[in-house]
Image 1 (cartoon, helix red, strand yellow):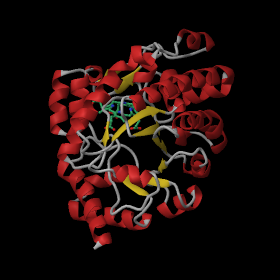
Image 2 (spheres, protein in one colour):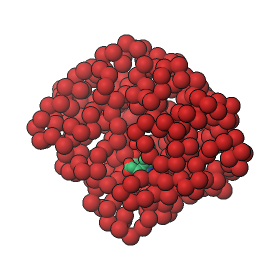
Image 3 (tube, rainbow, N blue to C red):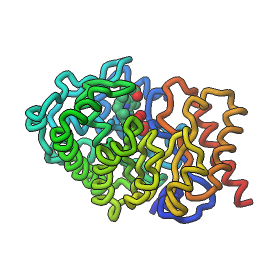
Image 4 (cartoon, rainbow, N blue to C red):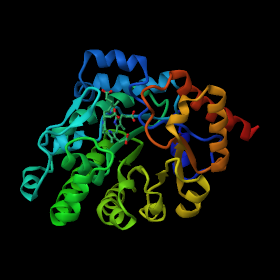
Length: 345
Ligand code: CP3
C-alpha cells in the first residue's frame, strides 16, 4: 500500500483532498547532489547503474517533496537498445553519429529482447521501488515513436527537426517501418517497466507540436495509440505531446488516463477539447520558476484556480530548467500543497 497515492487516485478520476504535484525532468541538473554524481560518472553510467539511477530518482522526493518519483533514465535508451550508438555530449546534448538515412539502415536495427538490452532499467525500477518503501508512486516512461525518430534521423537535437520531417515526407514507407519498429520495442519495454513495479507510465512526445494536425495523427498519434492500447488495462497512462493541443480530443479518445498540456493553451480550452473526465496535467511555464518566490506563488495559485481543483495534476508545461534554484522548485511544490489544504478547510 502507498502512503501517498494522490497521483493514482487523480488519474483514476477520483476527487482527492488536494491536487498532486510533480515536475517533468525533476531529477537532474538543478539539484546540487545530482551535480556531485555528474562529476564522477558519465550520463549513461548514471542511467545504467541501478544504485545511481535509484539515488537520483529519490533526490527530488526527499529534497523537494514531490508526490511522485520518475525513474532517472532517458528516452534515448530505446534507440540504443535497438542498436544505434548514442552519445551524450556535455553542454550540447545527444549525438547519434550514424543516423538513419534510408530503408536499409532500418533493417539493421533490431526489436530487442528488452530484458537483455534494457534489464538495467528494470533493475533500477525494482531497487527504487524498494527504497521508496511506499512513500509515493513511481512513474516509468518512454519517448513517443515520432520523438525518437526525430533523434534517430536528425542525429542530434534541433529546434525544427527538418531532416526528420523530410525523411517522413519523402520516404514514408521507410518512416512507417521505423515508427512501427520503435513502437514494438516500446510496448515490450513499457510492459517490462510495469512488471518491474511502475504505477504510472508517461509517453513523452516532446516534438509532437512540430507536426500539422494531420501529420500528427498519421506520424505520431497512430503509434502512441497502439502503445496506450497495449498498456492501459495494466497501468495508468499519461500522454504528453508538447504543442499538440489541437489533438487533445483524439488523444483523450485513446483511453489514456491523463494528458499533459503546456502553457500555450488555457486549462479551460484544454478541458473543453479533452472532455470532462480525463485528468489534465500541467501547465506552468518552466521559465516562471525563475521569478521571485512571491510572484511564482501567485502564478501557481492562478494556474490551480484555472484548473478548478480536480481532475488535475500540477506540473510544468515542459521540463524544469537547469538554472532553477532548489528553493524555487520547492516553492512550486509547497504552493500546490498549501492550496489544496485551503480547499478542504
Ligand atoms: O524526469 C526526470 O527527472 C527523469 C529523467 C529524464 C531525463 N530525460 C534525464 C536527463 C527524462 C524523463 C528524460 C526525457 C527526455 N530525454 C526527453 C523528453 C522530455 C523533454 O524534456 O522533452 C527528451 C527529448 C530527452 C532527450 C535528451 N536527454 C536531451 C535532448 C538531452 C540534452 C538536453 C537536456 O535536456 O539536458 C538529454 C540529457 C538528459 N536527460 C539530462 C538529464 C538529467 C541532462 C544531462 C546530464 O545531466 O548529464
